[in-house]
Image (tube, rainbow, N blue to C red; front, side):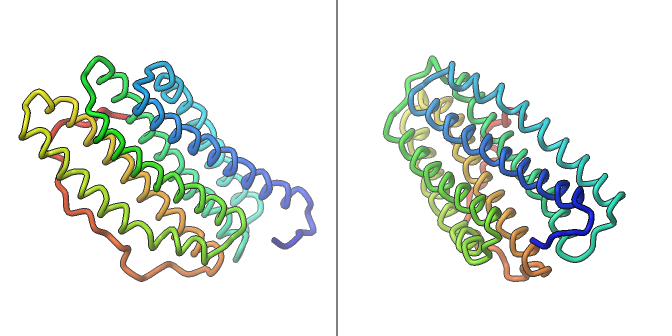
Length: 239
């Protein structure tokens, strides 16, 4: 990044980068702990995730406010303007990732007293592990402005969708085989869908990195393999 004649301008941009980095760390931790809480049936850990979301909300508002002030005061151009706009976009995606991790944690609390077939819980865990890798990789790519790494994350989105479709069909099978599984499996379906949507947000961040570095928007159609329709199963726990 170029240095500016006004040192405080560089400080403003660096503050945005640090805040995005902090948001990314909080979002990663929330997703990891939400998944661990689901696997271990740990309601205390789930409650910690729910509380942690407040910090993400505060950071997102601060980044948005500082970005607007920076644009008003500095009237940035070219890469500086793109960096400021990208900070707003990425903070928005990270805030939504936090909401989705919080939703998973809420469902952990809701199903804590229900019998849980460990096999299908592990299926959600596997999917979450892959999305956590995407989140880590895309945050690293944002920090290093690495468009190649960002595009790699973008390309992996289709595989997450395919895995979700497979898990969706497996959970429906469990519900059809035994009506006693319906409540638990419905909650688990939403946990899986929230994980899949977190993957979508990592893809959004990858697209933002491409815009930040090149000044261009990705025009290629995003790889998607989500053929499920979960909306009619059960109302989602709100963020």
